[in-house]
Length: 442
Image 1 (cartoon, rainbow, N blue to C red):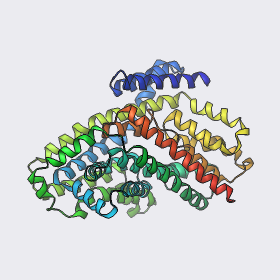
Image 2: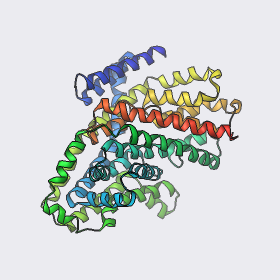
Image 3: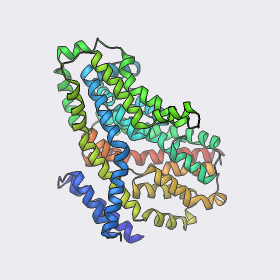
Image 4: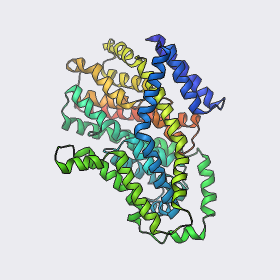
């Protein structure tokens, strides 16, 4: 176990060094790192390649088409001026100072029925439009949204991870919801404050170019701003979210529920959103041809898809090494850690595997025999597991690479911002759990 953990740490250090300092393309580094790691930890060559391809394919099968369709929606919103109209309206409602909090709250609500990656892809044009219009650094806006999205995904049923934890620990779902809702407030505050206070001085290439693009906006684009209705601009984004929410809540066997469940499949929901965007495109006459927008979306998405898939493959190889099981057994054999044991196990599993879901389910499975001997309830244990699962996101997380390619954020910048933000969020949630414990919640 120690050997495998050391091997993973060495490979991660070499991975970051190769991308940040040697400037080798992330796709090549991730694939080679996955192969090397598999061989080092004892997987034979054929097994390593099999796991790598499984991880790549598993990541690609649900994200590839969604990314392309999401990029197409973004292209249409940019071409028709919809992104600018939406940004103007949101800024009018919230003001620049409250924008990060509005994005965090939006992410918190949206991600309850929708996967983090899909939700972020759908909101990309709005995120960039808001950053441009408000002259707020893109990292502040984007990471505020990411904070809200991640909180719901990690702590709030009916998302799959928290539901699985409740089931494994036999926790009362109502009590778990109340506890995690309180803890989530601290997590969101920690994540948004980090983005607002510590990322405001980091200027990306996007931020440097956005003002130039704003000044060069053509009269044709300015005319388009007056030709559409705000609600119509929102529909390509809101309708898929509503459909995915319906798919999450309606899972019965009646014909209507089956139809709603089908429409709630992320690919189907986003395809419907893209169809609405296409109608909007043809309603507002532009100089760009429809096929050109489709091709631009595919070209822009290709790199995002490939690198995200490679990141997923790397994470799969780490999980196949079995390091999460060994680490879990190691920490479970240390009862003197007491109160913090669930938090620590979950944090180690997230750091090792890059998967919130693996961390949640793995930690709960390891700790279920200890529920009766811990100084708190199964629901409090679930909250501690959820908080630990935020710590920390880095190069073996597919969302890390999604941010890297969608906004062209350098890897070293992501480590200083996104990775540290996840650590802050985990400890913020832990602070919330401790407050509950101190006031008598067990």
